[in-house]
Image (cartoon, rainbow, N blue to C red; front, side, top):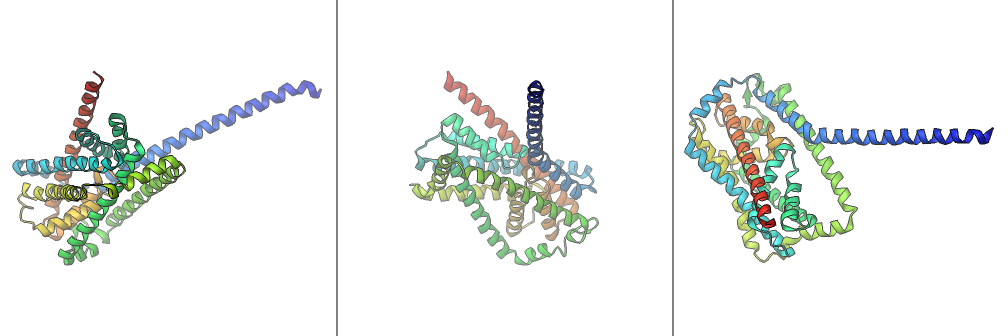
Amino acid sequence: MATAALPGSFVACANVAKVTKTIKNVSKVVKKILNYTIKTVFPLLLGALILWMVYNDFDFSLLWNGLKEMNLWWFAVTVFFGIMSHVIRGCRWRLTLAPLGYNPSAATCVDSVYVAYAANLVLPRVGEVSRCVILERHEHVPFAHALGTLVMERMIDTLMVLLITLAAVAVQWPVFLEFIGEAGVQLPGGALFSTPRGWVIALLSLLAIGVLMFFLMRKLSLWQKIKSFAGRFVEGLLSLRKMKNGWLFVVETVGIWFCYFMQFYLSFFCFGFSSGLSLAAALLLFVGGSIAVVVPTPNGAGPWHFVIISIMVLYGVSTTDAQVFALIVHSTQTLLVAALGLYGIAALQLRGLKRKK
């Protein structure tokens, strides 16, 4: 009897194994969906929520009036500086790869920057990975080496933001204190941080930064398990020490941030209500906007508007005008990034076809 029951037990075990395998597959799918939701949907929803909180009582008919009165000549100049910041960043990246023995074309490096910034509009912080993938595919530069140089690049950019922030705070200390205290920042409904709306925006931004740091640390721990990858990663990170033209790296770094600042500052002259703002005011606004884009929303949408509107009101700009300025400037800059990304993809594809021929 026991021998006759044996095949049945095998069948039961096989069924249990199939069920277990199915559960594992389902859990993997659910995990992928959750990761995708957190990385893609969450930033979009967060940006949309903050934008709604900032603009829920805004009369959008005023936006059309602002566009009609916009000085297109000054707008064209801001576009020029926006493009140049990408071009210089691509050239600087090429410079950091030289000590590692790689000499990719400047065009590929610049086009990869175009694509990277456009990719960040869809999925925040994925642009750095796309830059490395493009360089590996088109110029045969190992992914780990390229990523190491990008980490070094981000460290330098963080230092630049810190230096510019210190300069802005030193020059505009009274306004900075007022902004921190939010004593005079008024939107319809009261002071931002004395209402639930202001606190919700701040807490959501901190939550988003925390989620971003979680994924970055998780990826970092994975990289550290791969010795060969980590070796190349560190080698790329230390490439600056081997750089022969260190002075050129410094010049290009300053050039990138000069273009960023000029793109923002010259946008003041596109509108009559903001053309009278001082260079010092532009510096503080620029710093506030640069810090706001750390929040992982598409191109900083939401937090950037919140900060820019808050500080502009401190300088005497009406809330409505500040809302118009933030919406138009951010939207046009985002469209420029998207257009450059499409150009970069097309240029890379055409260059790849020519090489095949």
